Image 1 (cartoon, rainbow, N blue to C red):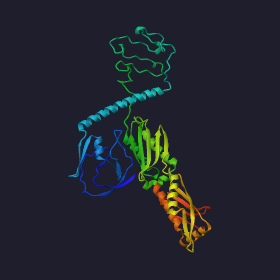
Image 2 (image 1 turned 120 degrees about the vertical axis):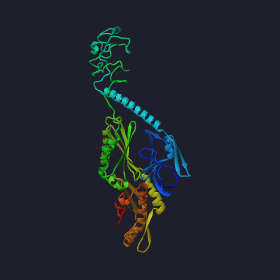
Image 3 (image 1 turned 45 degrees about the vertical axis):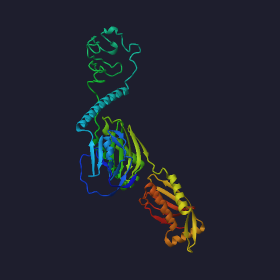
Image 4 (image 1 turned 135 degrees about the vertical axis):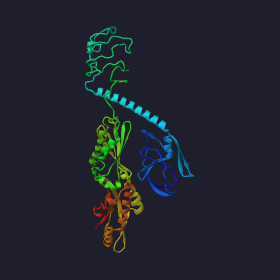
Length: 460
């Protein structure tokens, strides 16, 4: 949505790379300028958490503006407009010490999260191992033990392949003086059991809290590497693309954008398969950089947008190597548009007729029967206007055409229809967005609108 308005004393805050205002600049003498702003349901997120604001953000000349009071509320900063010296005064906020403390706490929590995710990934890999089974190694009640364990005094457990059993020692946390055993199998599951360690809360050296080692190291997401990977696609299909990514707990938000004023015609020439292939290549490149990070199992959700038209052309989701694409149908109301043209233009403006004068200056009417609209795969709108001519109207058409190389009422009718379509769908007939014909009921083409928006006239 585009809005034009004047700004004189509006408190706005320019967000750039997430930093707050930290310097005071000197501006020109007060002036009054008309500005054109874009509103596109812009959201504010702080540390991956969406926040509500009192004033809707907007974009002017590629810069996003957010109310300084809203920013202050998000970061515990008080704002005041001093009209006397034309100054925005900010007070409060986090001290440098508190900010450092919070950053340290965040880093610590992130490290703990990485450890837990590493352990979870290890457990999931174990569960997905085909050799893993929850079936007991033996059908007897001793779970594969050859003998019972009377009072922990037994020295061997042949069913587990263990050569010695630790002697009982009540001074240790588990009651055993021996800290490790070396079994040959892992409880009948087909994998080696980790060394037993009474110094850990789980009793094993590589599982649970207090583990002595970890088989998986989770890397941080390298956003610069992702930017470099996406740079390879910035001129794909002879269109200049821009990419932006945002990482949540389970989803990567991806925006693919281009300037339609410069490249919309090139985009419209692309087949659906080429567009989907391009999006899939971009998603593949992102996921390749997420391998080994906490984002490697994320889903990518995004949209492809013509920023000049403020129009989302494609909405997509990429999950586990599969791309699902939904093309946004901007012509969903095409049937309603037929009713609008026939009611508001044909009936109200023309009384359902066009009029022509013959060589004797007598006026003859021809009935406007209706219009059909169709949209091809490239988004080009094609219309057909049908007119019912009697013999006198046909002769009058030919007489007026011979004198002027066109028919005035038919030209006005075509202008009104095309203007309505251009306004409703943000099209331009001169760019080939709209083509069509005006035909007689018997199928004679009397006017053809070509892909340059020009009228080519004929007569009966």
